[in-house]
Structures are given as C-alpha cells and as structure tokens.
Image (cartoon, rainbow over all chains, first blue to last red; front, top):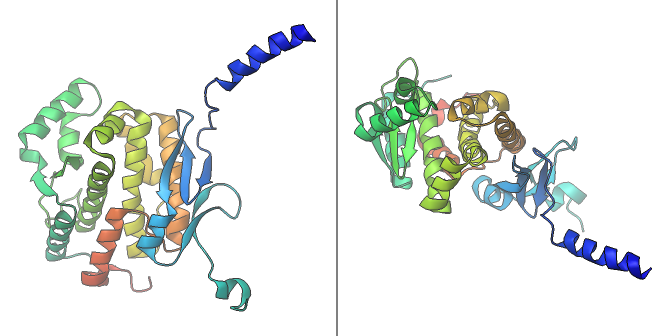
Length: 88
Length: 199
C-alpha cells in the first residue's frame, strides 16, 4: 500500500501540472454571453459577444446552442410575454 | 434590386471613414503597396499583380483600394465597394480593440489568427448581404478567399464555423460587427432604397 502511494502521489502531482486540456477543433460552446470556437491550436477563442449583439441589434441576445445541437450562436432571448403569455 | 448610385457610395465611404477615423489610398499608385506586393510575391504568398488589382488592404488606419470610389469596374461593383469598406473598417476596429502589436502578431504570426480576424471581418459581407436581400450567403463561399491568404485548411474550416454560427444569428436579425452596425445605420437612414422591396 505504501509503495502504491509512493507511485501514485507523484503521478497525480504530475497530472495536476500537465498541460491544459485541449478542445476539439471546430467545436463551439458558450462562455457566459460569448460564443467560442475551438481553434486549430486546440484553444477556445471568442468570436461573438452576445452583449454586443444586443447593443447593435436591439432586444436581448444570449449565447445558446442551435436547435439541432450542431453549434452555438447568439439567439434572441424571448420576452416574458412570449414565454408565459405575460402573466407571472 | 436597385443598384447604388456613385454619389451614394461616395457619401457612404465618407461617413465610414469619419466614424473609423480612417483614410483611403489608391492602392495602384501606392509605393508601399508596390513594395509589399513584391515581398509577398517573393515569399510565394500572393501574386504581386493580383494583390495590387484584386485586394483591398488595410494597414493601420489606411485603407488601400484598387478602384476609384464611386466608379464601378468589372471586379468592383458599387455594392461591392460598399461591402469592402465595412470589411476594412472592421479590421480598424480590431486594431483599436487589440492594439497594434497584438493585432499585427495575431494577423501576421499565425494562420489561425489570420483566419479568425478575417472571418470576423467577413461577417460584414454576411450582414450587409442579408440587410440588402434578406438572404444568407453560404459560409463556404464567404471564406473561400482565405485560400489566398496562406491559411491552412483546418483554419479555413474554423472560419467557416464562425460564419455558420453567425449566420444563425443574422438570419434572426442580429448585427454582430461594429462596422456592419455603423454601415447598416447609415444605409437605413440614407440609402434605404437599396434594400430589396420585400426585405
């Protein structure tokens, strides 16, 4: 048991200091209101800010997945009226 | 669909240049562009003549164009001149946002960085075309010119993903770029007749 711990602890320490996990090239995700794509170096990069889109386009926009789940983009946030008929 | 008039194009350019504090230079007669064309040719990146005649280029706040603004040519229609102005102004916004060193490093230093910056500017094409016609240009068609920028196939695919994602927002009425926003505000106010009537 002691031997196992002697091997495991340094191994875990090495893992903890290892490189950041790379993303899958061309994958997209939301990071708050930002839409990000995984670039060819395996790092996430923001390409659209839905807060800016709200400022440019009017209304409120937020990052969300496509309906078919094939990517992410800025989509208009439905107003209360369209969500629940305006009644709370 | 109504074509822009030369006066509309000239006034629009004047507006955009004022908003982005930019100036325009005739690329065909520019010493620095001829020198750059020669360098690009020697490095095997771009054919010098092609670079001078077929591409608009922005360095700092100077937009180098291979046409006379408001004079249509076979390659540069008046609408094309409106679109390219927004594209180049988006690069100026990127420069302001990132600072000159970071911008230059990202653009010149890596294929991925260049593809990312160009994809963002290509969204102007997407957004202005949608404003005018109500249609969405295919992502592959928009990013196709990246092949001439020494960008890898992987990075072109990422650029297409960026455009495809933005298309879904634009289809729903989003404006995603600073330069498109300025351009569309102006066109809505002063050149609304360029929009397809049903749009």
